[in-house]
Length: 424
Image (cartoon, rainbow, N blue to C red; front, side, top):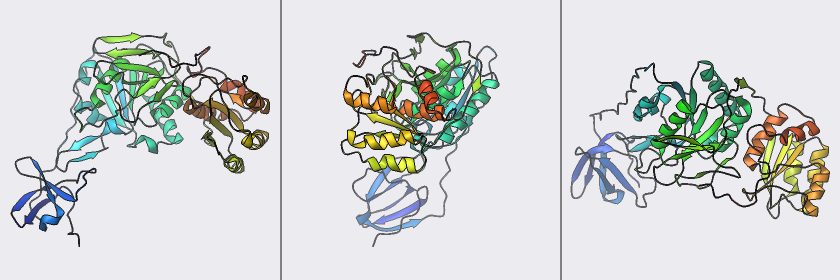
């Protein structure tokens, strides 16, 4: 029978046949193959003991000294701009508890600022924690909350706003904010691919460069700032609606798709590759229709999936089709039924780079005749968010078509090519 093991952070005495050890029980490494118990010795070193060698584990009365983290009090410099940091969670918001060895996603915005003292050289910062969520748990109502709280910071005369966010769904949130916010100042979304317990963490570098953009960007739009390459040379400033996470773990995972990045930022300053929006007045519009679905077409896609969405009264469907924007004729009847039932149906391409062109083949032309909206070079995730925004403002299919084909926030590129541009 496995011996009961106290909670991590407990002072324990471990007896084996050879020796008795005392230390602080730590969290067992998640990837460890052997069943073992890890303790932090008084010397500060960690030691692993195989469970099979342990005769007894006894909690000790003495309590280990709790980890203390006191956020730094910041002195405002009237010569520096004021920027706001809004924390929502994710890998950038993780730190090591050196008492237990655990990594916790519990960084408040103030803690983020305190952990990266270089930020104080850039601007006067204020921080708030909106929530503490991994990005896979983000919901459309969270996008609305982020947009509302960002608008509040802009009304407080912040020169810019930095939003820390998990990377997995960052591009959904950035697109949503781009449609919901017209902003007179930079709104920068950033995150980290690797948490702060790792020597290769990109958290501080991304945050510092995001602060530089927010403080000195002198433009008004939503953007994403992330590592440009594996080394720490610079970050790229990506359009909020044309950016995508293209690798699961690399530090330079984010790429602008069918578009140049907006610019680059480093210790040397900011350089722009595109003309930036300026002179906007603050406008907040958070109307969304949440009953929209994004479907990736694949051979064997069952038409009942579409029928069920119609039955559940979904107002919009975005297809991620093949190539130039195709799906099998086997599901045409269900698509036509969805459109006849009042749903807006849009088409993007799962090739990522390039554009939908549904006039080339008969399959595409038939879909256009049914009323499917061809979304050009819009990313499927962006089209999904945009259709939610569009249907929050109209239920009329023709008006929805007109709005989907109108460029609001760089989501559509006129005359984009079919090959990945060499922009990096």
